Length: 401
Ligand code: SAH
Image 1: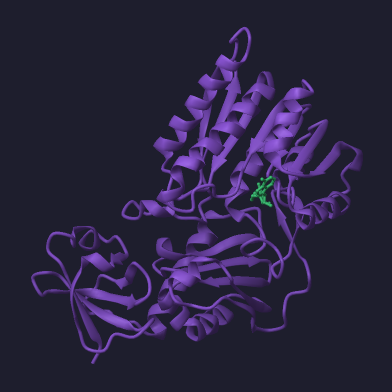
Image 2 (image 1 turned 90 degrees about the horizontal axis):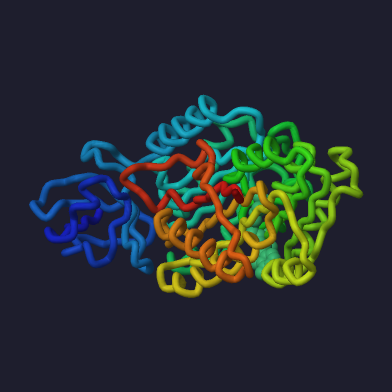
């Protein structure tokens, strides 16, 4: 008999409205032997069975809903249906690439599971106790439903600790991927290192925005800060930028970026790579009176949780203020935040206030920006109306008028 949890009447409404996270404080009562990762039956405060969830004793998110159908068992067939539906969604909506987020956790009905596809290599992160518990079934289904040659695990994200899970990396199916896997996105070849790269190796979420940069870069002098392996830099060069300066503090990421220049037969003299702190670089460009026609700011998550927001806002303001002062009239700034704890309203408020500060720091105050576009992640990162936390990447395309 599966163990059960009963929700508390004053706190249950978000779960009843299909938010997948059941916080510890929402649970009124436990029944039976609850074990890490196993399935529990979830009852409302009126003792009605509402569905099933994965139990996670160490996390504040004590359970994650698998299903709101009281009749639906959680078994191999359940995961097969979810994974097949996720793959189908990508086949419908994602074109022009073989680097695809195949499964995006909660948004695909499998909380805690991330699967990125790089050609015939899949890279997985099992980030919740429930996803980890079903790992063997998930790997078996992925191997059967995709034509992959290898499945590699990168469950080394910090969130695993909160779930009481050890970090784990290694091969799950087929041979370990060769050092770097070749993918093609928007007609550009990129090298992805699933073993040593950040997260699963590549920031797939920025695909649409890289395409936008490609479309906007003709004859522009571009600055790409926090460039990682140069995703935006290569897009800018492909789009006809006459020079691209890229900054990142990871030497390994820059090494891959440089290899890709040759791989794509780009003119290496047009790509300048700086292995350094981007905050310092932005300040130094100001001191040197540099000016750029297009600037990308895609920093790491400054606010991993709400507790970090005050410092994060300061950091976002600093880089945006400096970038705004570096962009020429008629120039563009693409600015992003991937902090889930910062919603788009707060992000925009922060950017708008950075623009006021930037103007007040200039002697003649002649600095004004227009919002041309609001930016987000691609359609392989589905967003559910009942799960706003999944909408973590936001950005603005600004034009200096
Ligand atoms: N725009 C990239 C992804 C950026 S991820 C893409 O499209 O692929 C964030 C990057 O910021 C990482 O590569 C990390 O190495 C870098 N980084 C983090 N802190 C930094 C700092 N203070 N200065 C420079 N780079 C930094």
